[in-house]
Image 1 (spheres, rainbow, N blue to C red):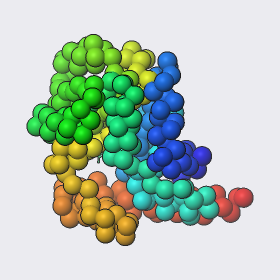
Image 2 (image 1 turned 180 degrees about the vertical axis):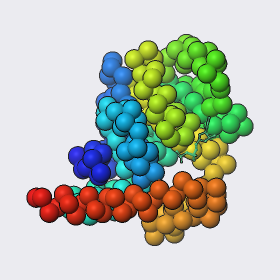
Image 3 (image 1 turned 90 degrees about the vertical axis):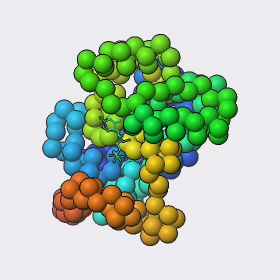
Length: 243
Ligand code: UDP
């Protein structure tokens, strides 16, 4: 476990997180994985009920190079960045092979449809259902019923953060799904609507910059990044001075 601004991140590789995920999928109790980047950490620190949700998760993975960098400042480096996109494709591949049901909740109807088609092509045996992520409070009961009827082993919720994590927490006990995970814009990535940054940007740890150029509306959200860096740096220096 590595703490960054008090948030306990699992110090595991993507492969190791998937192994944990497989154990959760075989378990009778509900489990939650949260993938958290710097923006989400800042949201959680500003909202005590969200922070409580984060601390209840079975695993929190560092989904952002900012978290990996900050962990180094604390003198407790993390093994690697573990993204929601990567976990999603590996857990879905496992579910297809193990005969487990997967439910995708989120994104526009077009993106959801395209993502389902892509996944069915990749994994013809996959038991997959889904619902787009645009529904009102009144429709929520019908959404919950549709998930209950399908009874997935794996629920992937792409409603954006923190909405998806609040949704999972609110219905965790009622739905009683072995593994639920918030996946942000992953359904759009699966649909081919949003491309991950080219390898060059990923390797240079500049994926955030690539996304900013492609989607300038993210600028406001990315303002959280320098604030995160400053707070984490100060906290890391303080933590190391006390050791
Ligand atoms: N979304 C949704 N319902 C909403 C708001 C957002 O399904 O009410 C979807 C949106 O279509 C997108 C995802 O949530 O697929 C959020 O993607 P974004 O890249 O903003 O999330 P991040 O990965 O940065 O958390």
